Image 1 (cartoon, helix red, strand yellow):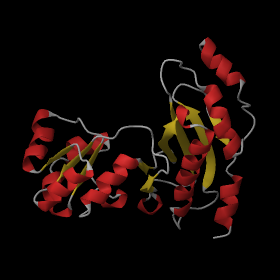
Image 2 (cartoon, one colour; image 1 turned 90 degrees about the vertical axis):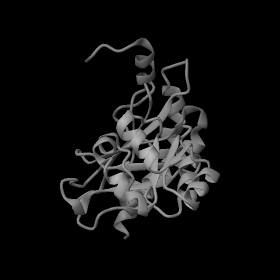
Image 3 (spheres, rainbow, N blue to C red; image 1 turned 60 degrees about the horizontal axis):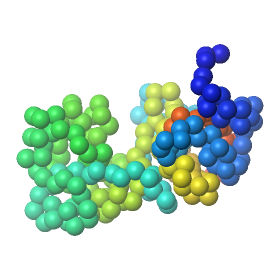
Image 4 (cartoon, rainbow, N blue to C red; image 1 turned 120 degrees about the vertical axis):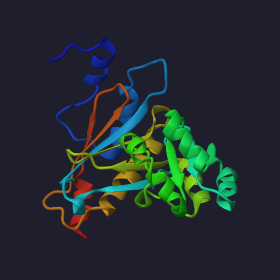
Length: 238
């Protein structure tokens, strides 16, 4: 076993590695596994799904507005013009522009934003940025609501804590669901909302067990396994 720090080792002792906790109990345990005393650690969820992302019809991708947000202040950039530009500013967008903003991203390698929203009429312009936006996961996409005519709604939801997610090659969805300081109840509600969203997005072509494993962890703490059986039972009734 690799050598670990004393604080991590102490946190690890509080977790029964052979057990799968109920979601409520797992969220109550999370604050006890916090390793750093210097900052408010984030809480992440990792859900392993029974899908093969190599097949387009099994790609699980979407966005969800968490009831208590993520605890992160989102910097939102919007590529649009005309009345939609003012709508974006009124909704709280941090950066708004059209050709000027696209040029800044492409020519100056500027990425001081966490999410990029664009109106459909600007996608010809945004498409030219695919090579620099795609690898960073910043390319606007209608499937997650970042290509939309309702830019005001998109900006407000992102500011409120909308989380975008996409299944990785190994069939795992990772997402941030809050901060340790949220407390057990808010973390439980955020986690439940995230899992329920994944349940609703089950591809019809997915075979076998869909919700294979769920793990919660703080930024520096050990993983806590969550019992997926309630969600597996829920899927069986559909």
